[in-house]
Image 1 (spheres, rainbow, N blue to C red):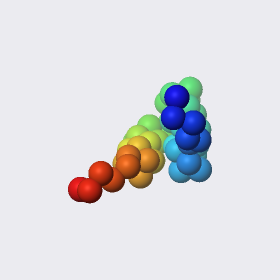
Image 2: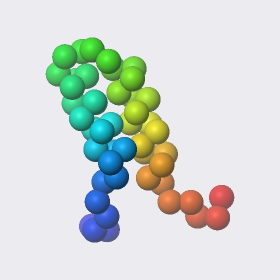
Image 3: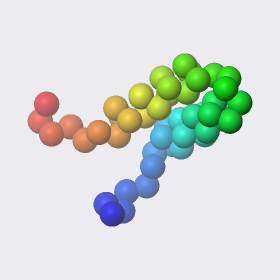
Image 4: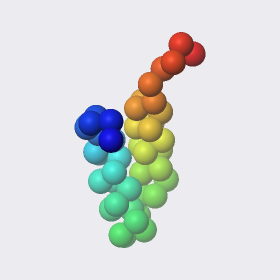
Length: 47
């Protein structure tokens, strides 16, 4: 394991995704949040 903790953005996105999975509501918004959090977490390797 890398030892890195999830960012607040990732935690928020995860909660939204879990809620959407349970209720079926807000799936698109949760998907967008998750995508943004994932993109923000990717280290930039000179790109």
